[in-house]
Image (tube, rainbow, N blue to C red):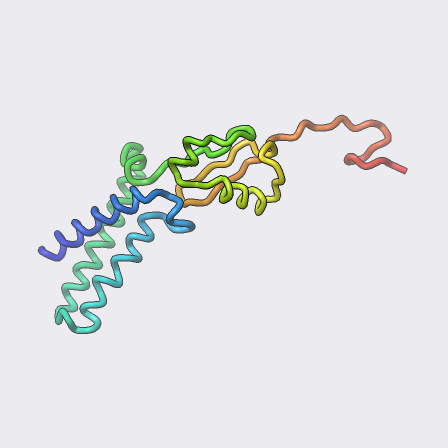
Length: 163
């Protein structure tokens, strides 16, 4: 039972710590995926190198971790409040071509990082962006401003003059 309690304490400590770091630190991985990947090698390594002669202890620890991960994902799935506490909500960084400095500062996203992502997505100017949103996984999603449709004249097809 001591192993289960230790894993629970480490799990909660790491989950809170990773949540406080913010979503930009994770890239493609969710915090729960990263947490699981960080803890498993630590629990199993002692059993593998025989510093702790109990393979059973390592298996109990990993099983507890898998159980906690499953319960956390179920809690997030069933409770909006739990989802808000454990998973971070997307953050709007750009709204109709205007930077939202408070949000960028809170999430520690520099203008250079944002413009780099805009350029990768094929945008040249901030005014071309309706929304830039920092998603929960740390990626920046970009929604372009809708362009006003040009009226076709009888001599044009898809914006090109007909000869």
